Length: 153
View 1 (tube, rainbow, N blue to C red):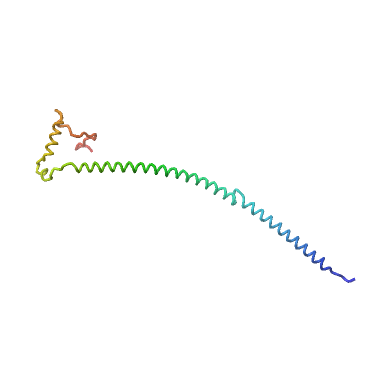
View 2 (cartoon, rainbow, N blue to C red):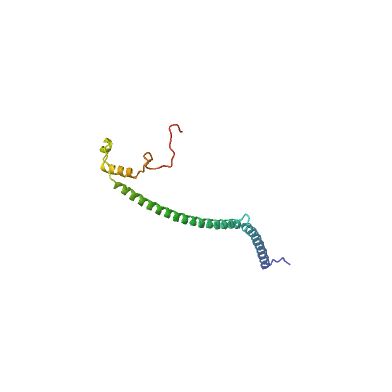
């Protein structure tokens, strides 16, 4: 009897071997992927750990930003108050400077020659009338500063 090959059986056997090889290859690929995924999600040194650290840093930055906003609002309010006070003081100073311009001046040539004007004589009369007996040598304005003598350093 001649040797007879059943090609359908041989084709089926080859298909089964290729299918088994494919299944084994897919299983090995799944094992490799599972290990990589486990390392990827590791909380200590993988991306999972990096995500956890970044999440904590985002929370810290949010808290810091809120504190900075509160400090900026407080500083803004303080600066506004100080600016208003400075503007009020500037208005008062301008008013004082304007009132100083209203005072009469003695002509410079009369002061140099030693001649007093009428207003100087009036002012001298008022200061003489305001003095009490015994305080001819007392200064018109008192100062809390000490006097400097020639020998003092």
